[in-house]
Image (cartoon, helix red, strand yellow):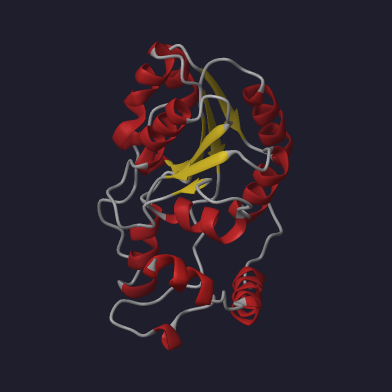
Length: 234
């Protein structure tokens, strides 16, 4: 009785002003990026959004990749963007994608990942192939632990230590070894072609996208600083 009466009396408040402000801030953040040039992460995320159905599920790894996805990939429905938000360990993205496909076998599932993060758990390709749980891994491959490199660049005089991933494998060939399909992407046309083929495939795909090692994520809050002191650009 009490709960029913409470439901009757409670009125839903409008959050339209706050939502509008959030959209304004989001556009301001996007506007600081130079989207000209070869294989910009922001452009790739916009292309990915256009190619996927609205109910597709996107997971992310940990690093610059999840920030670019959060900034540029528009989400239309609840529970279709699964990310640790940087609060989990590297390697979250691909196993999460396989799990999402198991839970929603009729949905397209894409993992937006980085080369460093994918290296942590990419062996789960074996699981996705063996259990017939096809997902698409889009690896934004800059050859570095990009987020740490960005810190080293901005705050430590460009002294790069333990962040260059010189030992990375050929991810496309690695995918094929596991029985999945692999693509190496050097252009937007390559990316569109690889995605189109992957969306119609019955096994997992790994799309290795070669981006610049100098790409950075902004806005960026320096360590020990407040939101008012965030860095908007280099």
